[in-house]
Length: 253
Image (cartoon, helix red, strand yellow):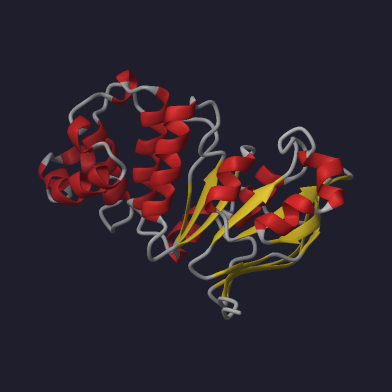
């Protein structure tokens, strides 16, 4: 039996309440280094709230978040990003008139000490051109480098957002519904893309498509009403009667 990877991300008793409503409660999560760890559950299970806690967009009510042994509890999003964690969002948010290359150049510059001084001179952006092109090649957008983001098909916009996340050079990548709203062809392309970009990093993904979860994940955590219901390898989780009853009955029928 292979050794269990050392945890790169851990939460201890993590919780978040909103005016008495407990959205996330007592979550002890352990994500092994170099693995793909899926979070599944129906709407309202707490998945996106948990993502927002992990990335600093929400402060926990209780508990701790540890990344590579460093306590990031309550850290701001920019501090989390500098620590080596990047995320994609469920809803695309791009500048429609900017090209794919310009998007990635800005993302690359944003992770340096140059900050937001890009507008002062095009020379500041040119220094990132080669790296931007390389990232676009990684996500299958090399030939669309000069195409405005607004004219890209939906699936290609999600690929561009992944390139933006990779521009932060993350060791931990959080993907929120990476295949949401996609047709079958784009889903398969995205699955292949995640397989490629996982090399050398850890991935946590929220995903409703259980075929995608089964194809990509090393471990699955099922959330119910903000709490962990079941956790384990996909085949074990898929066969658990509690999961079949609560979530997957229709998906695996």
